[in-house]
Length: 256
Image (cartoon, rainbow, N blue to C red; front, side):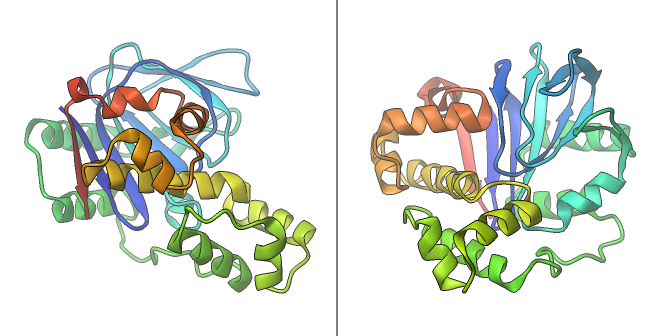
């Protein structure tokens, strides 16, 4: 059984995955192996790093040799404070990724319990809160983001299928296109296009969960066709969308 939980500001996956080819995420991701170690190769490194937990920054090129491990992945929206909070909980790293979650054993045991006994979305959300921010002092949205970037983020999130040009978005917030592109990447860690694709992927999952075919979901989410979705999905996640959404995968999707 593969489990996928989607909320406004985070996504949580729990299950088995094939080895993940080189890709860049549109969000930050905390990957934790439940039953064995796995390996990560960052684009700026020449050697694989073996670990049980890794925090991957938004937009970081990397690949993962899962080796049959049971994996829990917590995706964090790039505009939230949660990535910054988790960075403080990691032991460190040589390049962009950070390794060794401070309470790794406790988190592994918690994820194993979740895999063995499925919980409701609200319970899982609270458990993830304990991992992200044990003191429970931070807001979900980064209050330090420029108001104009927040405006662009909301425009994209309100309808990811809309193909707003950079010029149109810049005009909406009274910035030059060049300044908007630079400021958005500086504050979120990802380009506007990748941020939009990240949100389109979430829309695809929503449409598939509602009973649509993958082709129909791709069109409704703003992709030109299913081939466009497949290319974008592999570029974003390093696997084919058919792996998750085929009947044999037995994916359980829950919206919080």
